[in-house]
Image (cartoon, rainbow, N blue to C red):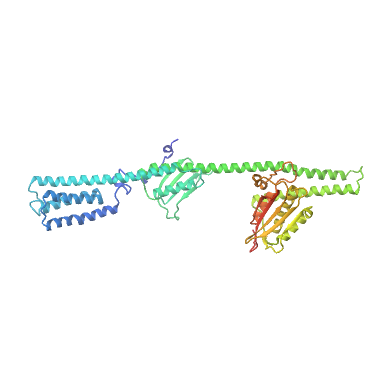
Length: 494
C-alpha cells in the first residue's frame, strides 16, 4: 500500500496554496520588509531623480530621461517586487509627462509619439518588473525544492534500527515545518483511546499552538502537528515524514518484541537448566539421607558405633548440601528480582578472611592467608562478604589441585581494596572464564557438586556492595578470583 493511500485526512484550511493570490505566503513571495523597502525607495528615489534632472539643466533627450526612469523602476522591482514596481512605473510616467513632455508642467501631450513613448515605458517597466518577480519566485521555489530533496534524502538514509530514530524523525519534522510540537499517537485496541508514543516539542497547557495537521498513518497511528500554517508544497515532505515515523515506530516495536523474545528464551534456558540441575542436586543428597535413615532404622541388624557415626555423618553432610543449594537458589532469586538488602558497614578484611577459612571444612590445612592486619577498613555487608569468601574458597579447594595450597592475598589502594583467592589447579581457558559467573553453568559437567550458582551469587553479592569480581589466570597455572571493594568512608545502607 502506498503512503498516499494511507494519508486520508489533512486540514485543507491549514495548507496554503501558492497559486491562490490571497493565500500566498512568505515561502515564494518577497517578504513584507522588502516590499516596504522598495516602496520607500520609490517614494524617495523617483522625486530625487526628477529633482536632479530638472535642476541640473540636463541636456538629455526625452528617450535618455525615460531610460533613467526605467532603470530606477527596475531597481525598485528588484528590491520591492512587481506590485511596488508597477505603481512606481505609473508614477514615473506621470513625472516624465509633467516635467519633460511639452507642454511642461501639465499632463497634456502635444505629440502622439510622446504619448506612445510614455505608454511603451509603462508596459516595458511592468514587463521587466514581472520578469524580476518571476525570477525571484523561481529561485525561491528551487531553494525550497532543494531543501525538500535534502529532507527526503535524509529520511531515506535514516537507520531505522536505532532506538532513538523515532524521536529523531519527529525532531526533524518539527524543525522542517517550524512546528511547536509534533506527536505520534497510537490507539489502544482494548479501550480505543489514543496515547502518545513519542513527542518532539512542548508547550504549557493553554498555550498550545493551533493544530495544523492530523494525519491518520494507519488505523492505529496518527501524526499530529501544532504550529504555523503549512503550504501546499509541504504535503509531499509531510507524507515522507509520516512514512518515516511509521517505519521507525514499527522498527522500535519489533526491537522491543525481539528483546522480549530474547528475555523469554533466556528465562526458558535458565528454567530448563534449573530443572536439570536441581533435579540432580536435590535428589542426590535426599537419596543419601533416605538411605542412611532407612539403614539406621533396620531392626534386624546391629550397627557398631563407628558405622552409626558414619551414617549420621552422611546425613549431616547431605543436609548441608541441601541447605547450600536452597540458599544459593534463594539468593539468586533475590538478586534477579532486585530485592537484595545490603547493609554496608566498615569491616576488617583480615577478620572476614579468618571467619571464612574457619567456615569451610578442611580449609585451615590448605589455605595460606596473606592479609595484613593494618589494611584500611572496607565498606561491605559482613554476612554477604563472608558468603562470598566461603563460596570462593570452597570452589578453589574443590577444583584446585589435590595437594596444592590455596592462597589469599589482600592489598589496599587509594579508594578500594583488592582481594585475591588463588588456586593452582588446571585453571580455565580465557574464553570460558566469563561463563563461570552465568547461572546454572558448570564447565565440568561430570562434577555433581552444586547447581552452578555459587560464583554467580558471589559476583551478585560483590556488585550489590559496590564492588566488582573477575576471574583471571594464576601464574604457573590455576585460577585467581579477584575482588575489589570500596574503602569505608561513609558506608550506608544500600
